[in-house]
Figure 1 (cartoon, rainbow, N blue to C red):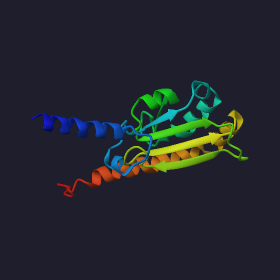
Figure 2 (cartoon, rainbow, N blue to C red):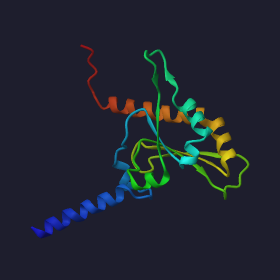
Figure 3 (cartoon, one colour):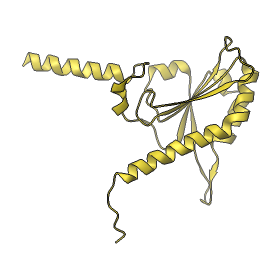
Figure 4 (cartoon, one colour):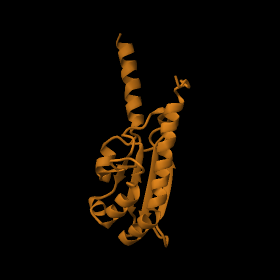
Length: 171
């Protein structure tokens, strides 16, 4: 009895330790994403979130789906600080990181897309600049492409979910 209980506790502990690991592993590939459809988790410091960048993110990432009435936005932005993010669940389906890295030496900021980082079906996009000005310019220039990436992956998830249902009968 104690051997079974010990074995079950060991397996459970390994499972939960792997779920929130900061390293990408094949074990996490089978874990599903969390969060609601149509939400983007924006991970950045409060100084960045409460700046002009938020206006560009809001304009570019929360576009309206036509012809719905009342208006329906494609995405809703949810903010978390990096400290809050590392303490919580990292498996959020759409995650956007905004980082100022003084050691970043390139002339233009970078936008990097990563798939299946902490969960299967997850899209993580990193926007990085060496200072606030470069980060702002990168957001201005690339927010529409970022929206398109999130939108494409979101629709692929929906399509995959409904393709599992083999009911093709109309009546």
